[in-house]
Amino acid sequence: MESHHVTFETVKTKETSLPERVAEQISQLIIDRHLTAEDKLPNEFELAAQLNVGRGTIREAVKLLAARNILVIRRGKGTYIARHPGEIDDPLGFAYYPDQLQLAMDLLEVRIQMEPWVAAVAARRASEESIQVMRENCLLVEQDILAGVNHLPKDMEFHVSIARCTQNLVVPKLIPIITYSVGLFGAINGNTLLSETIIGHRAVADAIRDHDPAAAERAMRDHLEQNRVELDAILEELRRTGGEWSGQSILPPLR
Amino acid sequence: MESHHVTFETVKTKETSLPERVAEQISQLIIDRHLTAEDKLPNEFELAAQLNVGRGTIREAVKLLAARNILVIRRGKGTYIARHPGEIDDPLGFAYYPDQLQLAMDLLEVRIQMEPWVAAVAARRASEESIQVMRENCLLVEQDILAGVNHLPKDMEFHVSIARCTQNLVVPKLIPIITYSVGLFGAINGNTLLSETIIGHRAVADAIRDHDPAAAERAMRDHLEQNRVELDAILEELRRTGGEWSGQSILPPLR
Image (cartoon, each protein chain N blue to C red):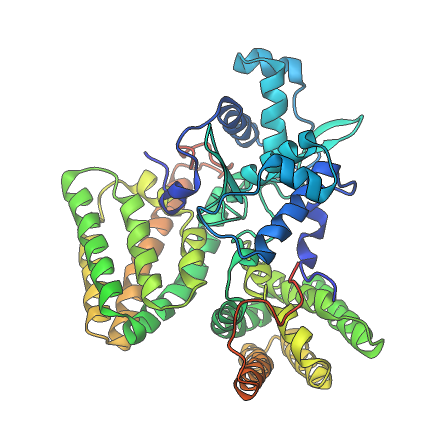
């Protein structure tokens, strides 16, 4: 059977270099041998002999795999399998999108569709431990807000910990992707809606703790509608100032 | 404001190497200058002077960015910005998950939640051009099925072309992620349900063409329920043979 990664075909360079092909072989070896986090990669000599290439090629291939977070090179200790192999920062390249406001609107549309469902499933399936972690994250967000520091990193962790309550492997991985643009809201609108964030998060957390899917879904939807209010305010501001939206110029860089 | 990429923090190595830091500077330069596909990167000399590092470091940084599909190195031609910068094959590292069957089940749960909604939005917003492309992709799947060749690559393209009908920037990028495991079904169950695939796809395509959101949603849900039937058959087979599921051993490699 052929690979099914069809839509990414254009992503690959037409001419695959030797280190690139060797990187794929090493990657396959990791998968076949079920090597996981903290397993050490066989050493250069062994790999070179096994794959019938020079040690320089192995070194180049290892660098490629490290750049993709499949391997982690520890100076003086050796090369290890990454804790979350192949998972990278900004996996869809959102930072390179020219129109960050359009991206924010489209992400919000996906969030409003996904996350109320996620909250409902979380309420249905959450274990006591996952509820515990989620509630702790809820408190950490509040602490950051009340301390006047940027709460957005903890805010995203809170949403991820809700996703973990679903016991679905994939959902927690999707949350950091679809919440990519949250920094944008905070950057523009300041702290006007922070108390609503606290109240909104509490409502979601309580409903999940009480295993009440309908309440969790509703609370999450209400919470996300707040984001829509903020985004509409940005659009209104742009209209008022007659400013045409031209990418990220009025925004701080997202990374 | 701090970066909001919090959940990926663990992904980065604690000690950032010089080429890694230079890679980040070049990446920021691409974003700030709005460089896009087919723009050539400034040459090594210029970058070395501008970032105040040696040309060897620039070369290493460029290799890192090429490994992440941010740059494309063309032999004898120079270094260019990638067509979809930062977008990579298998961006969540699914290939490294030890339990591919659990992954397939969890992905299917997400698909059944997302894709009927995607089909409904597609029916509401599709332009005539996007409908045209979607219908052509529908035919290409049928041609592959009738020719007896693996239709799964075209099948995924069909689902992506439905997502493009939504006019949402993000949705078409999520489809290749959540359809990651489709190869698994084809690999196990053979061609038993191929005629149902043809009928199911046509029902979705017709509803979108007719701008009928309710029909599109229903047709997509029915189509995906077929996948659930196939997955249940796999589980049943495993139970029957008394086989405990132990990763990918009974499956062909996914990549």
